[in-house]
Amino acid sequence: MQKKPNHSFTIEEALQLLVSDRRISKGLHESVIKQEWSNIMGTVIAKHTTGLYLKGSELHLYFNSSIIKNEFLYNKEKAIKIINDALGQEIVSDIVIR
Image 1 (cartoon, rainbow, N blue to C red):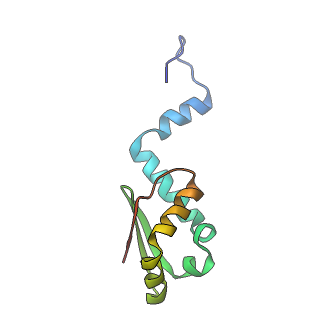
Image 2: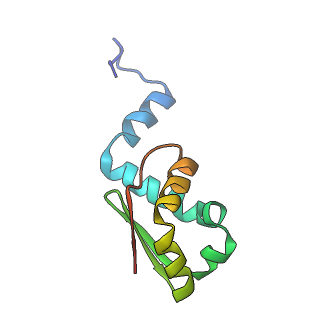
């Protein structure tokens, strides 16, 4: 993004510059996933999810149900596609289930 002659930015441009920092965008993506987890995956899966965090492009998930964990193992690729579609960009490349 080019600076304007008087170094003024619109609020939108300033926010885009701020979010373009990788450390900040990672935290923003993780918080969006956490907030929207029940909408993305449904209430049953959200109820049994005990933790999730984003490490690089890997989403680490913790479940308290072995049945949900097993179903997620079989449908990892579909879950990655659903999560990325919900976020509107390619953020998650792999899911680690624990």
